[in-house]
Length: 209
Image (tube, rainbow, N blue to C red):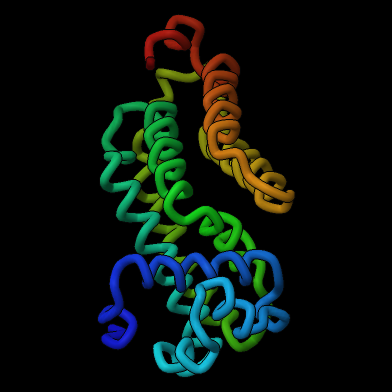
């Protein structure tokens, strides 16, 4: 618990968090200057180091905040309660869209961190990613009812296909200049509708809305 940081107003906390996400999402860990993070947050570098001992502590704090916020928003939008995976994905989209409106660079930071190899943070990241991925899979995979899908479909392969397509889409979005959250929401709604047409039994393709 970083008492110094949490003694700040919520507005100042958010400015520091967003400053960190903005810089770390555009550079590797090693090439992300703390001075740029401080500038983006609207504070001095020395003051940033008052709240965090070093860049590593700040980075891992931002990662922990990212996973905590994501889990909280998914829970808030009841993403793991629906009886079918497509409604679960739609609720997950709503949760992430609202999260991105408050923390615009959180998603880009998360993708960047997922592939970060710097030894200063790699081991901690991989441990956290493994725990989060296992939890996510354990909560979502039981929702897959074979009777809903086309006969003979490999459900695990389908799940991986949708996951990788989603990751690829967001990687393209976050790697570009600027981000239109409304466009992201519209594009992903179309992707969900497409997957329903491809994977569901015909009699179920319109019954999950």
